[in-house]
Length: 402
Image (cartoon, rainbow, N blue to C red):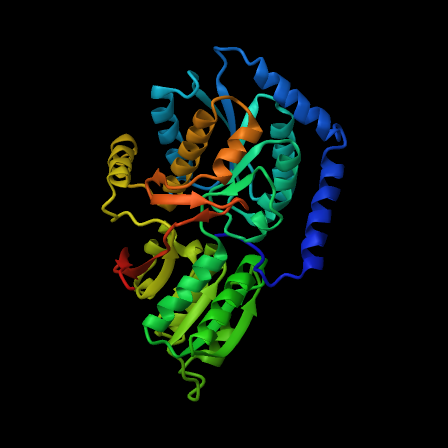
Protein backbone atom coordinates (compact mmCIF):
# COMPACT_ATOMS: atom_id res chain seq x y z
CA UNK A 1 0.00 0.00 0.00
CA UNK A 2 0.93 3.69 -0.50
CA UNK A 3 3.07 5.90 -2.55
CA UNK A 4 6.38 6.19 -4.39
CA UNK A 5 9.52 4.56 -5.76
CA UNK A 6 11.02 1.39 -7.10
CA UNK A 7 14.60 0.43 -7.58
CA UNK A 8 14.23 2.50 -10.76
CA UNK A 9 14.86 5.83 -9.03
CA UNK A 10 18.29 7.22 -9.77
CA UNK A 11 20.85 7.79 -7.06
CA UNK A 12 20.47 11.52 -7.65
CA UNK A 13 16.73 11.29 -6.98
CA UNK A 14 17.32 9.33 -3.80
CA UNK A 15 19.84 11.89 -2.58
CA UNK A 16 17.43 14.70 -3.43
CA UNK A 17 14.64 13.13 -1.37
CA UNK A 18 16.98 12.61 1.58
CA UNK A 19 18.18 16.21 1.32
CA UNK A 20 14.60 17.41 1.27
CA UNK A 21 14.04 15.41 4.44
CA UNK A 22 16.90 17.19 6.15
CA UNK A 23 15.63 20.56 4.94
CA UNK A 24 12.23 19.68 6.39
CA UNK A 25 13.89 18.84 9.68
CA UNK A 26 15.58 22.22 9.77
CA UNK A 27 12.20 23.82 9.09
CA UNK A 28 10.16 21.88 11.60
CA UNK A 29 12.87 21.49 14.23
CA UNK A 30 13.65 25.18 14.43
CA UNK A 31 12.86 24.98 18.16
CA UNK A 32 15.29 22.14 18.76
CA UNK A 33 17.78 21.17 16.08
CA UNK A 34 20.29 19.55 18.43
CA UNK A 35 19.71 15.87 17.73
CA UNK A 36 22.66 14.92 19.87
CA UNK A 37 20.92 16.47 22.86
CA UNK A 38 17.59 14.84 21.99
CA UNK A 39 19.22 11.41 21.75
CA UNK A 40 21.15 11.89 24.99
CA UNK A 41 18.07 13.01 26.89
CA UNK A 42 16.14 9.98 25.68
CA UNK A 43 18.94 7.56 26.60
CA UNK A 44 19.50 9.15 30.03
CA UNK A 45 15.77 9.15 30.72
CA UNK A 46 15.44 5.42 30.08
CA UNK A 47 18.48 4.60 32.23
CA UNK A 48 16.70 6.15 35.19
CA UNK A 49 13.13 5.37 34.18
CA UNK A 50 10.79 5.01 37.17
CA UNK A 51 9.89 1.39 37.85
CA UNK A 52 6.18 2.13 37.88
CA UNK A 53 6.23 4.22 34.67
CA UNK A 54 4.53 2.85 31.57
CA UNK A 55 6.35 2.32 28.28
CA UNK A 56 5.10 4.92 25.83
CA UNK A 57 4.60 4.14 22.14
CA UNK A 58 3.25 6.71 19.69
CA UNK A 59 0.67 5.68 17.10
CA UNK A 60 -0.16 7.94 14.17
CA UNK A 61 -2.68 7.05 11.48
CA UNK A 62 -5.50 8.75 9.53
CA UNK A 63 -7.94 8.24 12.38
CA UNK A 64 -10.30 10.78 10.85
CA UNK A 65 -11.54 8.06 8.50
CA UNK A 66 -15.02 6.83 9.27
CA UNK A 67 -15.34 3.64 11.25
CA UNK A 68 -15.58 0.80 8.77
CA UNK A 69 -13.01 2.22 6.37
CA UNK A 70 -10.47 0.12 8.26
CA UNK A 71 -10.09 -1.33 11.73
CA UNK A 72 -6.45 -0.48 12.35
CA UNK A 73 -7.03 1.14 15.74
CA UNK A 74 -9.15 -1.76 16.96
CA UNK A 75 -6.31 -4.15 16.08
CA UNK A 76 -3.76 -2.05 17.96
CA UNK A 77 -6.00 -1.83 21.03
CA UNK A 78 -6.57 -5.58 21.05
CA UNK A 79 -2.81 -6.13 21.06
CA UNK A 80 -2.47 -3.58 23.88
CA UNK A 81 -4.97 -5.49 26.03
CA UNK A 82 -3.10 -8.76 25.55
CA UNK A 83 0.33 -7.23 26.20
CA UNK A 84 -0.70 -5.40 29.34
CA UNK A 85 -2.17 -8.53 30.88
CA UNK A 86 1.30 -10.08 30.88
CA UNK A 87 3.42 -6.88 30.82
CA UNK A 88 6.88 -6.41 29.32
CA UNK A 89 9.90 -5.58 31.46
CA UNK A 90 7.35 -5.65 34.32
CA UNK A 91 5.62 -2.64 32.81
CA UNK A 92 2.48 -1.85 30.88
CA UNK A 93 2.44 -0.05 27.53
CA UNK A 94 0.71 3.29 27.09
CA UNK A 95 -0.26 4.32 23.56
CA UNK A 96 -0.26 7.96 22.45
CA UNK A 97 -2.64 8.30 19.49
CA UNK A 98 -2.30 11.13 16.98
CA UNK A 99 -4.26 11.70 13.74
CA UNK A 100 -1.99 12.53 10.79
CA UNK A 101 -5.03 13.56 8.69
CA UNK A 102 -3.14 12.42 5.56
CA UNK A 103 -1.26 15.75 5.67
CA UNK A 104 2.52 16.11 5.43
CA UNK A 105 2.59 19.14 7.74
CA UNK A 106 0.67 17.26 10.40
CA UNK A 107 2.99 14.27 10.05
CA UNK A 108 5.97 16.56 10.69
CA UNK A 109 4.27 18.14 13.70
CA UNK A 110 3.57 14.72 15.16
CA UNK A 111 7.11 13.52 14.48
CA UNK A 112 8.44 16.67 16.15
CA UNK A 113 6.29 16.06 19.24
CA UNK A 114 7.09 12.35 19.48
CA UNK A 115 10.82 12.88 18.92
CA UNK A 116 10.95 15.50 21.68
CA UNK A 117 9.01 13.33 24.12
CA UNK A 118 11.85 11.50 25.86
CA UNK A 119 9.40 8.92 27.26
CA UNK A 120 8.51 7.61 23.78
CA UNK A 121 10.68 4.67 22.75
CA UNK A 122 8.94 3.73 19.49
CA UNK A 123 6.19 4.74 17.08
CA UNK A 124 3.80 2.97 14.74
CA UNK A 125 3.62 5.53 12.00
CA UNK A 126 1.62 6.32 8.89
CA UNK A 127 -0.13 4.49 6.08
CA UNK A 128 1.15 6.87 3.39
CA UNK A 129 4.73 7.04 2.12
CA UNK A 130 4.48 10.73 1.33
CA UNK A 131 4.18 11.22 5.10
CA UNK A 132 6.24 8.30 6.35
CA UNK A 133 9.42 8.78 4.29
CA UNK A 134 10.20 12.38 5.29
CA UNK A 135 9.01 11.79 8.88
CA UNK A 136 11.33 8.77 9.11
CA UNK A 137 14.32 11.13 8.91
CA UNK A 138 13.17 12.79 12.12
CA UNK A 139 12.63 9.50 13.93
CA UNK A 140 15.99 8.18 12.76
CA UNK A 141 17.93 11.14 14.05
CA UNK A 142 16.01 11.19 17.33
CA UNK A 143 16.68 7.46 17.95
CA UNK A 144 12.99 6.57 17.95
CA UNK A 145 12.17 3.15 16.53
CA UNK A 146 9.59 3.55 13.76
CA UNK A 147 7.44 0.68 12.52
CA UNK A 148 5.27 1.30 9.46
CA UNK A 149 2.36 -1.14 9.08
CA UNK A 150 1.32 0.00 5.60
CA UNK A 151 4.06 1.78 3.62
CA UNK A 152 5.16 -0.59 0.88
CA UNK A 153 7.35 1.95 -0.95
CA UNK A 154 10.90 0.53 -1.20
CA UNK A 155 12.29 4.02 -0.59
CA UNK A 156 11.30 3.84 3.09
CA UNK A 157 14.17 1.44 3.77
CA UNK A 158 16.40 2.21 0.78
CA UNK A 159 18.84 4.37 2.76
CA UNK A 160 19.48 1.69 5.41
CA UNK A 161 18.47 3.71 8.45
CA UNK A 162 19.02 2.07 11.83
CA UNK A 163 15.62 2.73 13.42
CA UNK A 164 13.16 2.48 10.49
CA UNK A 165 11.17 -0.71 9.81
CA UNK A 166 7.98 -1.96 8.20
CA UNK A 167 5.90 -5.07 8.83
CA UNK A 168 4.37 -5.11 5.36
CA UNK A 169 5.79 -6.47 2.08
CA UNK A 170 7.20 -3.95 -0.41
CA UNK A 171 5.71 -2.92 -3.73
CA UNK A 172 8.37 -4.95 -5.49
CA UNK A 173 6.96 -8.12 -3.94
CA UNK A 174 3.34 -7.12 -4.59
CA UNK A 175 3.89 -6.02 -8.21
CA UNK A 176 5.92 -9.13 -8.99
CA UNK A 177 3.27 -11.43 -7.55
CA UNK A 178 0.51 -9.66 -9.49
CA UNK A 179 2.48 -10.26 -12.68
CA UNK A 180 2.96 -13.90 -11.74
CA UNK A 181 -0.78 -14.23 -11.15
CA UNK A 182 -1.44 -12.71 -14.58
CA UNK A 183 0.84 -15.27 -16.19
CA UNK A 184 -0.94 -18.11 -14.40
CA UNK A 185 -4.24 -16.73 -15.70
CA UNK A 186 -2.74 -16.88 -19.22
CA UNK A 187 -3.04 -13.13 -19.67
CA UNK A 188 -1.03 -12.35 -22.80
CA UNK A 189 -2.23 -8.83 -23.60
CA UNK A 190 -2.93 -6.30 -20.88
CA UNK A 191 -4.05 -2.69 -20.50
CA UNK A 192 -2.23 -0.77 -17.75
CA UNK A 193 -3.86 2.29 -16.16
CA UNK A 194 -2.44 4.17 -13.22
CA UNK A 195 -2.79 7.38 -11.27
CA UNK A 196 -0.04 9.99 -11.47
CA UNK A 197 1.01 9.62 -7.82
CA UNK A 198 4.33 7.96 -7.12
CA UNK A 199 2.91 4.80 -5.57
CA UNK A 200 0.71 4.07 -8.59
CA UNK A 201 3.43 4.77 -11.13
CA UNK A 202 5.82 2.57 -9.24
CA UNK A 203 3.48 -0.39 -8.91
CA UNK A 204 2.61 -0.13 -12.62
CA UNK A 205 6.29 -0.07 -13.58
CA UNK A 206 7.05 -3.11 -11.47
CA UNK A 207 4.05 -4.99 -12.85
CA UNK A 208 4.78 -3.94 -16.45
CA UNK A 209 8.45 -4.90 -16.30
CA UNK A 210 7.65 -8.29 -14.80
CA UNK A 211 4.73 -9.15 -17.07
CA UNK A 212 6.82 -8.37 -20.14
CA UNK A 213 9.63 -10.56 -18.82
CA UNK A 214 7.06 -13.37 -18.56
CA UNK A 215 6.19 -13.05 -22.26
CA UNK A 216 3.08 -10.85 -22.20
CA UNK A 217 2.48 -7.50 -23.90
CA UNK A 218 1.15 -4.17 -22.67
CA UNK A 219 -1.01 -3.07 -25.58
CA UNK A 220 -2.18 0.21 -24.03
CA UNK A 221 -1.25 2.31 -21.03
CA UNK A 222 -2.50 5.63 -19.70
CA UNK A 223 -2.36 7.81 -16.60
CA UNK A 224 -5.05 9.73 -14.75
CA UNK A 225 -4.97 12.35 -12.02
CA UNK A 226 -5.37 11.55 -8.33
CA UNK A 227 -8.57 13.59 -8.11
CA UNK A 228 -9.95 12.60 -11.49
CA UNK A 229 -13.41 11.05 -11.49
CA UNK A 230 -14.39 11.16 -15.17
CA UNK A 231 -12.54 8.55 -17.21
CA UNK A 232 -14.38 8.88 -20.52
CA UNK A 233 -11.29 9.94 -22.48
CA UNK A 234 -9.35 6.84 -21.43
CA UNK A 235 -12.19 4.35 -21.49
CA UNK A 236 -13.38 5.19 -24.99
CA UNK A 237 -9.96 4.08 -26.25
CA UNK A 238 -10.22 0.62 -24.69
CA UNK A 239 -13.97 0.03 -24.79
CA UNK A 240 -15.23 -2.60 -27.27
CA UNK A 241 -18.22 -0.29 -27.78
CA UNK A 242 -16.10 2.52 -29.19
CA UNK A 243 -12.96 0.73 -30.41
CA UNK A 244 -13.65 -2.49 -32.28
CA UNK A 245 -9.94 -3.06 -32.92
CA UNK A 246 -8.89 -3.20 -29.30
CA UNK A 247 -7.98 -6.66 -27.99
CA UNK A 248 -6.72 -7.51 -24.51
CA UNK A 249 -7.14 -10.15 -21.81
CA UNK A 250 -7.13 -8.02 -18.66
CA UNK A 251 -6.86 -4.50 -17.24
CA UNK A 252 -4.35 -3.64 -14.53
CA UNK A 253 -5.13 -0.53 -12.47
CA UNK A 254 -3.04 1.19 -9.82
CA UNK A 255 -4.18 4.03 -7.63
CA UNK A 256 -6.16 4.73 -4.50
CA UNK A 257 -9.61 3.58 -3.48
CA UNK A 258 -10.98 7.12 -3.82
CA UNK A 259 -11.25 7.13 -7.61
CA UNK A 260 -10.41 3.55 -8.60
CA UNK A 261 -13.92 2.48 -7.68
CA UNK A 262 -15.31 5.16 -10.01
CA UNK A 263 -12.96 3.96 -12.73
CA UNK A 264 -14.24 0.40 -12.37
CA UNK A 265 -17.91 1.47 -12.41
CA UNK A 266 -17.41 3.55 -15.54
CA UNK A 267 -15.41 0.76 -17.21
CA UNK A 268 -18.37 -1.57 -16.78
CA UNK A 269 -20.67 1.08 -18.27
CA UNK A 270 -18.39 1.14 -21.30
CA UNK A 271 -18.76 -2.60 -21.70
CA UNK A 272 -15.35 -3.52 -20.30
CA UNK A 273 -15.78 -6.87 -18.57
CA UNK A 274 -12.26 -8.21 -18.85
CA UNK A 275 -10.67 -9.19 -15.52
CA UNK A 276 -9.44 -6.17 -13.56
CA UNK A 277 -6.37 -6.58 -11.34
CA UNK A 278 -5.14 -4.13 -8.73
CA UNK A 279 -2.87 -3.74 -5.71
CA UNK A 280 -3.74 -3.90 -2.03
CA UNK A 281 -5.23 -0.39 -1.90
CA UNK A 282 -8.46 -2.04 -3.04
CA UNK A 283 -8.27 -4.61 -0.27
CA UNK A 284 -10.98 -2.64 1.49
CA UNK A 285 -14.59 -2.90 2.51
CA UNK A 286 -15.65 -0.08 0.18
CA UNK A 287 -15.25 -2.29 -2.88
CA UNK A 288 -17.79 -4.70 -1.41
CA UNK A 289 -20.48 -2.05 -1.14
CA UNK A 290 -20.75 -1.70 -4.91
CA UNK A 291 -23.24 -3.41 -7.14
CA UNK A 292 -22.43 -6.18 -9.63
CA UNK A 293 -19.89 -3.93 -11.37
CA UNK A 294 -17.25 -4.89 -8.81
CA UNK A 295 -17.63 -8.60 -9.48
CA UNK A 296 -14.51 -10.10 -10.99
CA UNK A 297 -12.11 -7.49 -9.63
CA UNK A 298 -8.97 -9.17 -8.29
CA UNK A 299 -6.93 -7.44 -5.59
CA UNK A 300 -3.66 -8.24 -3.89
CA UNK A 301 -3.76 -8.73 -0.13
CA UNK A 302 -1.17 -9.18 2.59
CA UNK A 303 -3.67 -10.89 4.89
CA UNK A 304 -5.47 -14.20 4.54
CA UNK A 305 -8.15 -14.86 7.15
CA UNK A 306 -8.43 -18.50 6.06
CA UNK A 307 -4.93 -19.59 7.01
CA UNK A 308 -4.75 -22.73 9.15
CA UNK A 309 -2.70 -20.84 11.70
CA UNK A 310 -3.74 -21.15 15.34
CA UNK A 311 -2.39 -17.70 16.22
CA UNK A 312 -4.36 -16.07 13.43
CA UNK A 313 -7.56 -17.95 14.16
CA UNK A 314 -7.30 -17.06 17.86
CA UNK A 315 -6.78 -13.43 16.84
CA UNK A 316 -9.89 -13.52 14.63
CA UNK A 317 -12.03 -15.14 17.34
CA UNK A 318 -10.92 -12.73 20.07
CA UNK A 319 -11.27 -9.71 17.80
CA UNK A 320 -14.79 -10.71 16.78
CA UNK A 321 -15.80 -11.37 20.39
CA UNK A 322 -14.49 -7.97 21.45
CA UNK A 323 -15.80 -5.80 18.62
CA UNK A 324 -18.65 -7.77 17.07
CA UNK A 325 -17.19 -7.88 13.55
CA UNK A 326 -14.33 -9.60 11.74
CA UNK A 327 -10.88 -7.99 11.52
CA UNK A 328 -9.65 -6.64 8.21
CA UNK A 329 -6.12 -6.39 6.84
CA UNK A 330 -5.35 -3.20 8.74
CA UNK A 331 -6.61 -4.56 12.04
CA UNK A 332 -4.19 -7.44 11.56
CA UNK A 333 -1.34 -5.10 10.59
CA UNK A 334 -1.89 -2.85 13.60
CA UNK A 335 -2.13 -5.81 15.95
CA UNK A 336 1.03 -7.37 14.54
CA UNK A 337 3.02 -4.10 14.63
CA UNK A 338 2.42 -3.55 18.35
CA UNK A 339 2.99 -7.20 19.26
CA UNK A 340 6.29 -7.16 17.38
CA UNK A 341 7.45 -3.97 19.07
CA UNK A 342 6.47 -5.32 22.48
CA UNK A 343 8.43 -8.53 21.96
CA UNK A 344 11.41 -6.56 20.66
CA UNK A 345 11.42 -4.35 23.75
CA UNK A 346 11.00 -7.32 26.08
CA UNK A 347 13.74 -9.38 24.44
CA UNK A 348 16.09 -6.41 24.42
CA UNK A 349 15.98 -6.53 28.21
CA UNK A 350 15.84 -2.78 28.70
CA UNK A 351 14.43 0.45 27.32
CA UNK A 352 17.22 1.12 24.88
CA UNK A 353 16.34 2.23 21.36
CA UNK A 354 19.56 0.96 19.81
CA UNK A 355 19.12 -2.50 21.32
CA UNK A 356 15.47 -2.69 20.29
CA UNK A 357 16.33 -1.70 16.70
CA UNK A 358 19.22 -4.18 16.62
CA UNK A 359 16.92 -6.97 17.79
CA UNK A 360 14.46 -6.27 14.96
CA UNK A 361 17.17 -6.01 12.29
CA UNK A 362 18.40 -9.51 13.08
CA UNK A 363 15.05 -11.08 13.93
CA UNK A 364 14.57 -14.51 12.34
CA UNK A 365 11.57 -16.82 12.44
CA UNK A 366 9.24 -14.49 14.33
CA UNK A 367 5.96 -16.33 14.93
CA UNK A 368 3.08 -14.01 14.09
CA UNK A 369 -0.56 -14.22 13.08
CA UNK A 370 0.75 -14.19 9.49
CA UNK A 371 2.99 -17.18 10.07
CA UNK A 372 6.75 -16.95 10.51
CA UNK A 373 8.70 -14.03 9.10
CA UNK A 374 12.10 -12.41 9.50
CA UNK A 375 13.85 -9.08 8.94
CA UNK A 376 16.88 -8.03 6.98
CA UNK A 377 19.29 -5.34 8.08
CA UNK A 378 17.62 -2.74 5.84
CA UNK A 379 14.48 -2.95 7.94
CA UNK A 380 12.45 -4.93 5.40
CA UNK A 381 10.30 -7.89 6.28
CA UNK A 382 11.05 -11.24 4.67
CA UNK A 383 8.86 -14.31 4.38
CA UNK A 384 5.44 -12.63 4.23
CA UNK A 385 3.11 -14.07 1.61
CA UNK A 386 1.05 -12.10 -0.94
CA UNK A 387 -2.52 -13.34 -1.45
CA UNK A 388 -5.27 -12.58 -3.94
CA UNK A 389 -8.97 -11.99 -3.54
CA UNK A 390 -11.70 -11.77 -6.15
CA UNK A 391 -14.99 -9.94 -5.59
CA UNK A 392 -18.06 -12.14 -6.06
CA UNK A 393 -21.58 -11.06 -5.14
CA UNK A 394 -20.38 -8.39 -2.75
CA UNK A 395 -17.91 -10.67 -0.95
CA UNK A 396 -14.21 -11.42 -1.19
CA UNK A 397 -13.17 -14.94 -2.15
CA UNK A 398 -9.54 -16.01 -1.98
CA UNK A 399 -7.82 -17.26 -5.11
CA UNK A 400 -5.54 -20.18 -4.45
CA UNK A 401 -3.08 -20.37 -7.31
CA UNK A 402 0.56 -21.44 -7.45
